[in-house]
Length: 192
Image 1 (tube, rainbow, N blue to C red):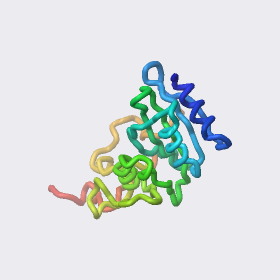
Image 2: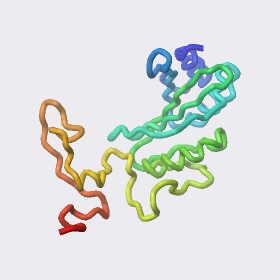
Image 3: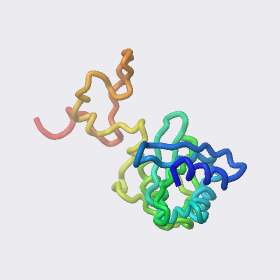
């Protein structure tokens, strides 16, 4: 099946769900992309796995994209080992109180990915059997993959570019320098 056919098939199987179907990437890397409402998240992944024509039996990865004021896009990539095609399934969650139903009961391999997304973005996964930090030390504060998170390296060494990341070509004001929680000012740490 072509990426377009994969996306159309999944969209059709989901029925009245307001799914948006598209294609991401190009040529050999093209993938069907299906955006579903939050309440259809689990059923979309289950349908992609259980339908004989889609047969997306391999859970590849799950993560999120910070869309700032629009919230977060939670994205899962599934692959069919039989038919050799893949599909990206996305849902959008609000920024405040971001929660998604866990898909660990559908794809047990999602457990690690949900824990990482929880830790890095602060998105909760309802029904996850063991949602606890995975990579960062226990005393770490914040969610490092959120766009508002200030990197410690930016405090120690200024940005080398002419503009701060996010500033437009038309100019704009520089944003005020901020320090992440627990990081001392450059003049306050070690050395003479």
